[in-house]
Structures are given as C-alpha cells and as structure tokens.
Image (cartoon, rainbow, N blue to C red; front, top):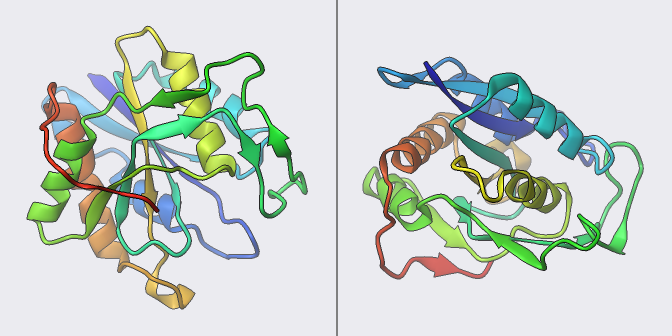
Length: 209
C-alpha cells in the first residue's frame, strides 16, 4: 500500500481552529485507489519546529506523494501554489513568538522551488465540481512558504512529487471563506487529480494572490 502524506497546520494568530487541519484530518485513511491511502498529519505553526516535524513525518510514512496545506487568510478559493521562495519575512510572530524578517529558509539554497504537482489539472478538477479554485503565484513568506520550500528542498531530485495548497477560512471567521464540507471535497478532488495526472494540462488559470 502506497502512502500519500497530507498535512495541515495547528491554529495560529489567536484562532481556535485552522481549516487546513480541520479539512485534512477528515481525509485521513481515505483510500484514493486500490493501492494508495491518505495519511494526514498536523504541523506546528512555528518556524523552529515545522520543517523538522514535516521531515519526520516523511521519514515515518515513506510517502509516494506529499501535499502540505495551510490557511490563506483573506482567500476565498482553494489556491494551488506554484512556487516557494527562499525567504522568511513574518508579518506576525509564530506560535513560539518568533518573527524572522528577511532571513533565508535554507542558507545557500536556490532562490525558489516550483511545485512538482500538476497544478493546472488540480484546479480544473476542483472547478469542474463547482468549487472555487485557482493557481496562486505566491505562497507568502510565513510558515506556509517555509514548509513548502523545505518540502521541495528535501525531495528535490527524488521521484516523490510534492507541493502546497492554501485554503480559505471557515464562514465563522468573518473573512472570505468556504464551508468545511465544500473544502474537504475540494481538497479530495485536488489530491486525487494530483495522484492520477502525470502530465499537466496547459491552460490559463493563475492569479496573483
């Protein structure tokens, strides 16, 4: 049985829930195909511990694919990220009180890494179900981007494809949002498309967010 590792984050910035984890944990144990099962894990929202926790999960599960997710405050759709950059520039402190500004995610590492997932095919699969989705050209510079960069850095040169998805808040947040059942289904469709698609489609679908 192959494993698809799917991660979400713990709550941060005084929130009591993080929709990325609330959605991801509902997919834990889901069998995508006869030989592929989703394993969901929660990451801490802290620069000092999130990357190491992610690497430990990868070593533990030996996944065939890894998709990390996180909350994108102010976003109203499921945002499939294209690129992670080698910069930490936190607008707020993380859950351990750290607020790195203009530091490298990996000293001496490449300026950026692209997702190795079929991002346009994932967007199409979600949109065809009537759920809002788009390609995002920026994953920010907080812990989400750090995790995305470290994920791509760790798996560079391997056969394990990986990437990152930002999700909207929940309706009770008072910000642009998506209902949890819709979010869960959108993520399921995106993950399934990622696994089933070897060569991405070529079509417009990106936005700056």
